[in-house]
Amino acid sequence: MNDGKPAGERDRQEGLLALATALRPELHRYCSRLMGSVIDGEDVVQDTFARAVVALEESCEVPRLKPWLFRIAHNRALDLLRSRAIRAAEPIEAALEIADEADPVEVLMRRQAVQTAVSRFAELPVTQRSVVILRDVLDEPLADIAALLGITVDAVKAHLARGRARLRRINAEANPLPDARIASAAILRYVNLFNRRDWDGLRALLADDVRLHQSTHKPRAGAADVGMFFTIYARSDGLWLRPAWVEGREVIAVFEDRADAKPSHFMWLEWRDGRISFIRDYRYVRYVLDDADLVLAR
Image (cartoon, rainbow, N blue to C red; front, top):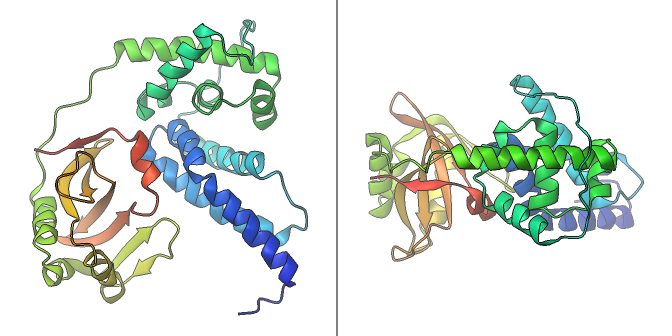
């Protein structure tokens, strides 16, 4: 279909969006830690791409893609954090000597940040959180961090030093992951129907106005349209579901094969009057599971 744009302009936009798609996992690593949630982080990534598409359609200039996308994601995340009234501001202390070159201490600090549970980053003030994620998790240069956040390099160093120290205290005081919880009757019913390949039984659980959201795909709405969701899954014989928990939310872990040690992705459902009103499926953005503290239910 011709949208009225010159072929060269369409090719430029499609090329930029293809490059941007390759940055999705890295964007999610940043946004999930900034939001303190792998689920909320993916919502920010999704919104970032929606805004990027609109901006590309309205712009004649080719942006530097990575910093441009990170700026959109950062600003969107801050808007959401402000709306929850959890943003904390605090004065900057004198900057410590922190260089771009990674000495052994720097390497250790970065390793600790990467291994820190996503939810714990939410306990840092937002600027400290951003700096620690960008520096220790994504290995961004100090100057680039300063440019993204609109602060000086010395301020970046100060936030980094304080954020690292606070994150160490948080990790030292943190409780281990909770034991597996018991699955609800509704989730068990869904899982059992799926594992028996009872697609008609699953479709019978759908509310008339059910909605399905799969990142990178157009949303579906209505029982007839969302019912196609099971038709697609029916083509994969080896799939196996198990009840699980992520970030205090009951979810469903999806295994490519019943014998697999780890799930490939997960989905979560919302219910209304015993019927499924919403399905969020992460099949096409499996990187979301990489940083998730998923616990299989008993």
